[in-house]
Image (cartoon, rainbow, N blue to C red; front, side):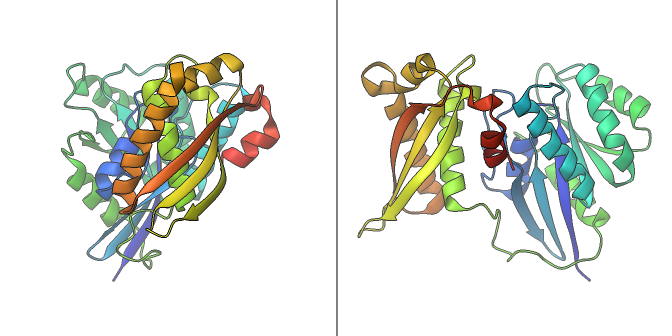
Length: 291
């Protein structure tokens, strides 16, 4: 008897969804940064155990905004809620529930029968587990909730066991050794973008996307990836390049190190920075990027 489930992972921006998926899968599936709305696509992480397989759909943080980009990100998360076998709602114990959390509850409510809750960041100094539990008892009575720290791994095994138990009967959709189904060029672009989020501030991280142009493999097995970092304004381009090319060099070198660890072979990045004015308002670009 084998069980399997697609699990939609939802919650506020920066609730720790991607960190939790990485902890469950035991590998770096999704990029992580302190900046809200780092995730822009539904990223699949795969956990295979004895008699079960869980496919996690790590979604963008649910955020109420009528800006074109935020609207598309929200639609992506809501679609995952509808299509998934199970829902994993991640709540951040360091932040008091407010209007944003109430809005998420409204979106999750129709799927309460298939929802489990991860009460995350219990190890943080600012954590208030009792406050989060009281909120859940009031808004989602009867929901199964698990106290955990995605960053430390505390409580993660109990959550995985509960998800496996709640899964319907079904086949394994991926080979047991898979922990994600992402294409290499997507993983490269996401790793580059993660470094932008880690090393730039204010509006710059959210004004950037990575566009793949070409790749080839050298005789020694090194993968050469060519792509553009696309921003909205010339001032952002200057920040990304940095004085004497210092910032783009830092981003490239850190990404290359991470990618070699991920793939097991050298990766060389050739990155240019260019401007596409107001790309976040362009529906055609957003449709291509967010899916």
